[in-house]
Each structure stands twice: as C-alpha cells, then as structure tokens.
Length: 121
Image (cartoon, rainbow, N blue to C red; front, side, top):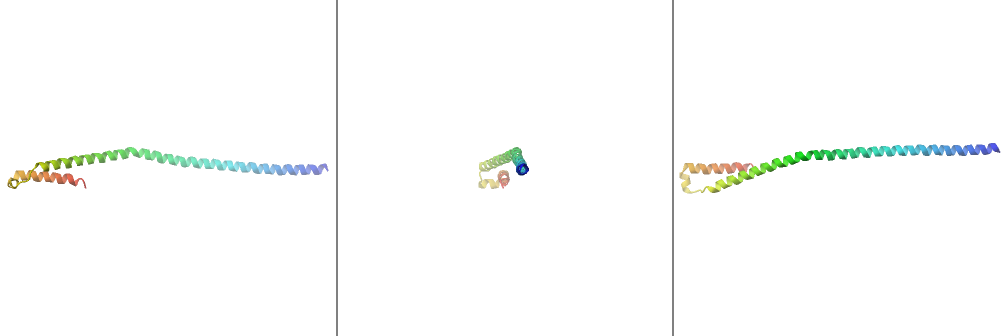
C-alpha cells in the first residue's frame, strides 16, 4: 500500500512538474515575444523620428527658396512699376513722330516695359 501511495504521489508530482515546466516555457515564449514586439515598436518609432528630423532639416532650404522667389517677385514688381511709370510720363503726340529722339525715348520706354513684363511669364 505504501508503494502504491508513493507511486501516485510521484505521478502527481511528475504531472505537476511537467505542467510547471510547460507554464515556464510558455511564459518565456510570451516574454520573448513581448521583447520582440517592443524592439519592433522602437524601430518603427526611430523611423518616425528620422522622418521628423529630415523634414526639420528641409525647412531652411524651403525658407531660402521662398526668400529667393520673394526677392525675384519684388524685383519684377519694381521693374514693371518703374517701366510703367516711365511709359506714362511720355505723351504720344503727332509731333513726337517728327522728332526722332523723342520717338526713340518712347520706343526705349516701351521696350523696357515689354522686358519687365516678359519676366512675369
């Protein structure tokens, strides 16, 4: 009888031991999976940070480009305004057609206005 009780006790202990080993192996597997998932999250977040940094690094280039365009537009606007004012100062009259110098000034003012307007296209 004692042997039978001892055998049952050892069997129960063996089953409990096997279950304990399975639970430990399962727990280690879950832990390793969590670590892998955490590493994936960290890697993806690193990619996000890299994109943010890349975008932040591009801002000075964008600002310089906008400044360059603004300077060009300001210069073009000034040139068109000045050329238009010069053309407006010259009154076309029949006498101008008889005066080659006056007509040449008129033609030069028109050419300057045309040149300034061509920068708009």
